[in-house]
Amino acid sequence: MTPASPEVIRPAVCSEPDHRAHCPAISFSFLLTSDFDYELSSERIAQVPIEPRHAARLLDTRDLTDHTFVDLPELLEPGDLVVVNRTRVRAARLKGRKTDTGGQVEALLLRRISDDLWQAAVRPSRRLRSGTLLDFGSTPAVIEEGPVQGIATLRIDAKAAMATAGEVPLPPYVHTALTDQNRYQTIFAHEAGSAAASTAALHFTSEVTARLNQRQIDIAEVVLHIGLDTFRPISSDHIADHQIHTEGFEVPEAAARAIKECRQRQGRVIAIGTTVTRTLETVATGDGLVRAESGTTGLFITPGYEFTVVDGLVTNFHLPRTTLLVLLTAFMGTNWRDVYQAALERGYRFASFGDAMYTERSV
Image (cartoon, rainbow, N blue to C red; front, side, top):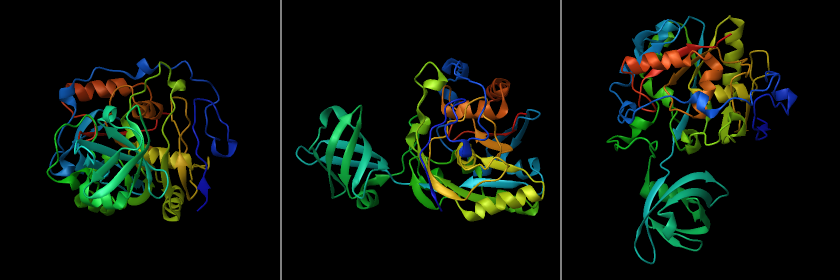
């Protein structure tokens, strides 16, 4: 596979025509971050996952009917293709001590810079500086640079540290510890590399996949290694001023072939989550198909973006003022507010451990 160049898409800025045949022709720079705000009390953010996984609620936005996730196969059509993210959340939250004082420290490994250098969020950052020696489960580490705004460059044997002192990190808005860390992994999780789970796929079980198979709905797998920036609210006043994070991805030959076969049988491509949506649209060829490719993506999907691959989307309910909600608005249109209001009124649970919705591309 040919590596893809890192890229950032701002509304109506198409700097690479071969990758941007589906870019909007008009500017959406007037969009305000406040356009993607709504009232959400902390009580509505799910703190624990529901059991069994497929018992989560599922809102069909086409007619605002209530279902449970196990019903998803019946909402789709024979010949459709479901695409999931097979990334696995690594045990990237490390708990340790300062070598000199024994004071407690914590590091969250965000991105590998080289073999033994990592970008990490560290705390308490005010008590750490360049040259500080740390110990994580008998694995030594040293702060090479920083911290700056809580982010440091750490020299560490990450594999050894994660094996002895690592925990799976939960989203910053989840304050209840999991008794089973596998509950924050999807059943498709095989390739470790994410700091967060592909949460829309957390609802899948073997029963759901069996029912998809019975209805002749195939499943294809891609990879997008999710960074914690996915939870970061947009801080700028205008959407066009936001610099979205980049993430590593892979679209295997098997997935590209499955999408081609889906098109040949007049089926639809159903993305399970915003991560899959970004991945597929990153390698879109403009004719409903995708290239098999790997690299990094900074694709920022905003209202006005022309989708050419994803026809349907299964996703959880996102927090206000996030890039995830912006993507959803681009996909389903401004009626997201009616859908979210219905979900709030009916007691749906929000965010990573919350319920899900199924929606289709607005035309």
